[in-house]
Image 1 (cartoon, rainbow, N blue to C red):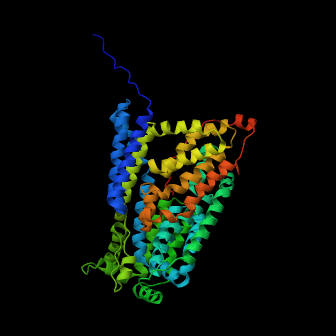
Image 2 (image 1 turned 60 degrees about the horizontal axis):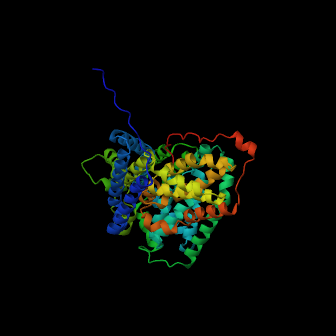
Image 3 (image 1 turned 180 degrees about the vertical axis):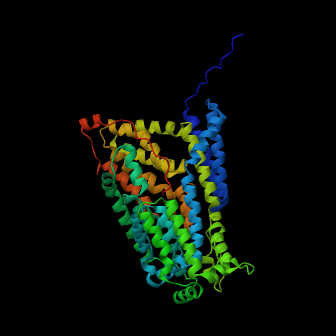
Length: 506
């Protein structure tokens, strides 16, 4: 008998209901987890919700003709795109643990207590992190270094850590967005065929006013806000710090090294790793008594105990044991293990984002919106809504930048709109709103690094909220919209450029 050939498999295009089901399941599960667990939802319930919604999406994809093996491969590939973020996140945990031990954070806090006044503290936090973000090109590095210290200072001087976290994120994302060395500022125009100088000039129209409004709001909050009773009197705090740590400018060497390496374009993971190791060396040289007290193992020789202290601070975090309980609380923590809940959250978000993109659920929901966006303002608003939506449902800033570039580029060029308009709309939405979503890789990172829940700092991320609003308003008014001549439009390809692999930079 002749060998029978397998009948070809038919892949069905997802219906509107097919595409909605995974997102509806996610919305219900996320809402239920928040209602049941509150701010503790990030400690497991949100992760479970994301994985369960992924299973719903996978089942719908299989119903439409995909195999479980194909779905599994797509999810693994989607998760692999987040590995750079996970490596950075783990390394930041190690850095925080070591810098708590080395006195690096304690020295910054000491300077902040001495020179920063509560009345303009929030303003200063947003301004300083904006400058550091411009210098490093990385909102993640900015938050993990100066941001951590500023939140610690806030707790010492009696101002709100939640507002401070909002100020840190506002400044960090302004700086990250407006510097030519940021990976998102390079990637986004590259995807659509624009260039970095034009991209920065175009973004400046909505980004700078948003930042100035945010600075004004932080200044008003500081001037009108009430300062809670500080856990320690300022002078008492300075005396306590100097009695526990060797407070010296030399302990700031790890910060200087990290900033220099970031400015020179070294990948964030390597910059943070080197900054962590330098911090360990500083701890061994200038804080040996702190390290030995942390290890608390008389059976070890001093060199071995010092090595174990640095190793342990990187792995499981540092615990300060001094005569000052308030300081013990402030300067304990960090370690790679402290980031594992966040890693779990990112894995769940990336798995869900991968299945919705692979099975074309996202595209199926977006295309009807594109058909209804008849005006230029409507088209720009649709791009921005897509970027924000993907931050929420795909769970990663990188996906929220790339997918709209792929979907909308041809439409912008057909309407003789310069592709830079698309790049600016993406950055005004996908880039700045990513830290506002608890399960997004950026939101999870900020919560883990700053020690403040996304739900708590969200209302105070003024820049990240105002920037999309201004971007949409300017789109509808036509302010700053760049147009092409018919000849320029005909010369451009309608296909988006391929995205590079996710870099070890944030």
